[in-house]
Image 1 (tube, one colour):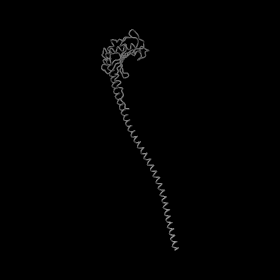
Image 2 (tube, rainbow, N blue to C red):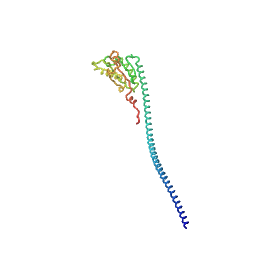
Image 3 (tube, rainbow, N blue to C red):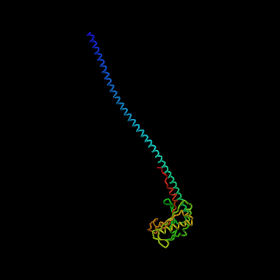
Image 4 (cartoon, rainbow, N blue to C red):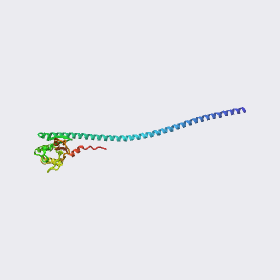
Length: 268
């Protein structure tokens, strides 16, 4: 019996040892699995954080794309307005250039017609030229008047009549008559000073254009400039003679002139 009991005891001990060994092995394996699971949980958290960052970045990019789309639309609209304004300005400049060329052609025709009609008049007494885009007919005082007088000589009436015939063919043009003197003071029973003389001489020409040659009075303006717009220096007899003159200035009507300069309406 003692021998049997010893064998049984030995078997039990072996069994217990085996069971303990198996238990220890599984405990170690469980610990390893727990470590791996903890590591996996850490990776999952890291991935979730990265996914959150990517989603935020994506949302930001989408917002920027929307902003860029709006900016792009506004930019395109601005460019279209700029192109439209440039087109209007180009058309305005082209139209203005055409009108200026047309006016220059008209001025040339006026100069040629006036010079042709005055071909028998001394060039020293009547000068026709274009200055500042308008036609100037400058007539010396010795042809038009007696010294110190505003009464027009009979011989000068033909000159004024020929000029009137040309301007009457162009009703769209106005006529400004300017009287000029030298700097020698003038005063007598008829005029007070050079201002008075220059104005009265211009008025005499305007009155003759209206009453004798039927130029519409609303087209006429009389002005006196006295000695203050000289052509030459008043230091010589020749210079003073050149300054004593009456100028008939043929101009576009002011309303037409301002219409010519009107700019196109530009979009904001």
